[in-house]
Length: 431
Ligand code: FES
Ligand SMILES: [Fe+2]
Figure (cartoon, rainbow, N blue to C red):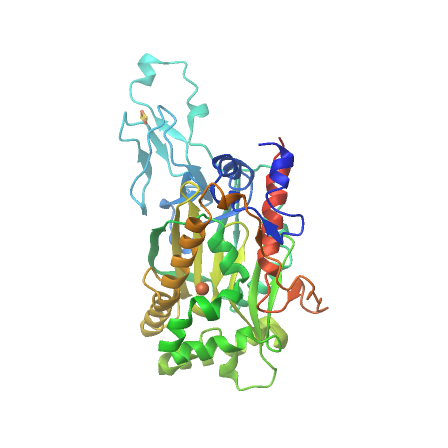
């Protein structure tokens, strides 16, 4: 595929694209290098590896990685591949290990990735340079408010630069308190027949689908409908995009309302007295850290390019991992604070499960839509037909206090930012 052909897959403004980007094998292969081989990607959370030797398995695109708290106390992200003959080194999803022993011929590595022992190598290959055969370290690792990101690109700009103006808003979710978030329960993982870009694009800023795709859920659940109504109104909500391809939908509340309007959780969960009491107790700290303007903003869902989505109202992160052009794995994390009473943590977890868990009410609709977009565009003729993401193209209005490109909440500004960044990355990777 030539650069010209790649450039023609998505228009410069991102308002038109060919569904080939969901199906073409060459495009997919290039994405593995140009996007998953270079971008910063979320791999997990520090609360999963508190102690030295703690580890968990994760993925960067299709690459299997082991994330450890090494003997040196640092976070290591390493390819989960033995350096002898390439066997998958570790298949236990998480745990604590002083060493990793390959099941094939028993090469043994430290939690930092050093090769400690290769049986019989002393006698049979005395000159073997052991130091050259440690696990492959992913060269760039950074931790942002407890979120571990990694990049295969040694020359990637610092993570904070890649987040750009989005970081100002991520504080509302990740920096409300002086206490770091911690994972509640395990990671939920399930597969869907969809291209990997559709979910992050949709969760980043496609509020436009909400009234149609979720109509039956809202008919059955008026409380949920009410909590979402304001998000569709241009007087009270916007769709905000950033140059890095990130974006979100955000509700603007007037200042001066009773405190509970600003709590960072969907209002229906405040019916549980312990939840209300907990968030009442931490509101002063949040206000002091965020200031009055940011305290009055609420993000529903957003995406950090390329494949991490966040839903602050249910304290959830979602990683979308590609498994070929037409299949994904969703991985979801739920968070809380260490000082939350168990009943509050249970409500947080339930809040996530009921909405975006594998059987969540909105998840069921979304997964079906993502599958039917993938399916609907798969045909030889269909995949060559330009599609439209141009809604709200002329509605940009910058707010001097709030960085980013502001759009009508039902616009496709975030989708276009996502597609533009995709195009830029795919072209940057060279011929
Ligand atoms: S492949 Fe791992 S020890 Fe041989
Ligand atoms: Fe949805």
